[in-house]
Amino acid sequence: MPLSPAETILDEISRLSDHRLYGRVAGVLGMTIEVAGLERVLSIGSRCEIVARGERRLPCEVVGFREGRALLLPFGKLDGVGLGCRAELAEAEPVVYPAAGWLGRVVNALGEPIDGKGPLPQGPRAYTLRADPPPAHGRARVGGKIDLGVRALNSFLTCCRGQRMGIFAGSGVGKSVLLSMLARYTATDVNVIGLIGERGREVQEWLEDDLGPEGLARSIVVVATSDEPPLMRRQAAHLTLSLAEAFRDEGREVLCLIDSVTRFAMAMREIGLSAGEPPASKGYTPSVFAELPRLLERAGPGQAGQGAITGLFTVLVEGDDHNEPVADSVRGILDGHIVLEREIAERGRYPAVNILRSVSRTMPACNSPAENELIERARRLLSTYENMGELIRIGAYRQGSDAEVDEAIRHYPAIEDVLKQDKCERADLESGYAALATALELDWPPKPAAMPECDVVADDMDHPEAAEDEAR
Picture 1 (cartoon, rainbow, N blue to C red):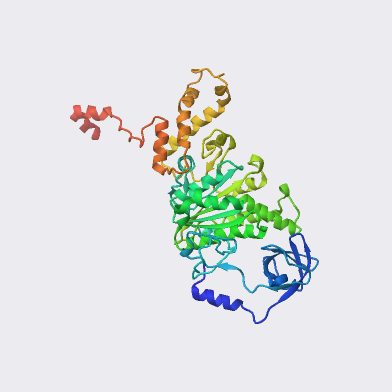
Picture 2: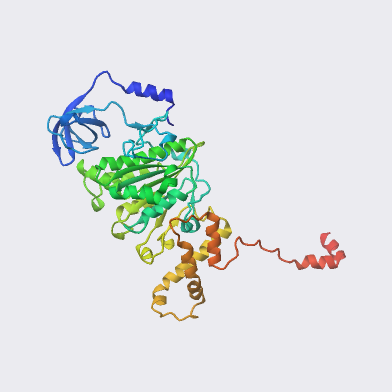
């Protein structure tokens, strides 16, 4: 649980020291700084500040030890760092003090404003950047359905409050546009958005054109661009979850978006290789696969009396290989996956969701029997059409050969129209089911089944004496 204001102040005071410890830079190799003199008081994750030439202070973090020296990685550029530079031990663990005034703001991985709107207000409670997930036995269950505002997801991949879903896509398939639609249209109180390893040119365009003023007003955006050091990219992901946890603890419903988990994993790979960790699958070090669940498990339902963090995390699949190591690991951690496919995008249907390859693990339990029946029929028709798609496209299928294939051919264009959605259009849950039922030529909502006629009752009415004998 977060500390109260008084406990926070006492905790900060207790961490202050009456003396300062420092060492000296003993070597620099690549992005790694070797520091001597502090190895007995440092541990993995400790923070130091290197006083570079010109009195520039460079924050660093300990990532390993080698031959009696501490290995540090910087949060900034190494310009001005040389042999003998002073390395001062930081006095306290880095924390943030989120507040409601952070909504509508853009910050970097250190929690500093980068939108030119002035300083950020400070909340009363401190949140560490690398908190532990809530205990499994103390967590609430996922809540009811959450309206994502995207028809394809609402209908076929229904998400519940506190669920964690992955969006798996190659580059240029519409992943960022889908994220902006989710940020604008999802029915939650607060959005916390982490842009990890993004192109610097695209950040402002995404904020202004895709997210827009309405979406930004109820969002906090954490940005770490691709040119920043790996520690900044890693910390941006942890800061995103810390901010989401702060609003969750207030009892709010939070939508946490991270784009992308793959770039977080790449940053972890750079850190691991710099510390001398041996590469494993596709160059990713073992610590990458240990760190992924620690990050992703922080999202989800909170404990009793808290809100929930609904997490949607993008995974940039390399070479459109959905079985590459990061994608395969993340798919096993999350509660479902949304697959965006390049072939669908090339046909001009956006969002390019492949319904047949996507799964929500809270379905069908969260739906009514009528909704499940509607979705299963639509999926069955899509599957039938895709199985016969090649023969249909080349004209080798003869109409009338199979009644189920004929039905799939008849309904396929209408189902595709239901899945198609402009980025400026919002679709709620009920309208999605209604549109799908219309595409399948069904009544919606379904009419209640009529009570079957009972011949025995009719006979008893004609012959009351027989009814009395039957009763006796």
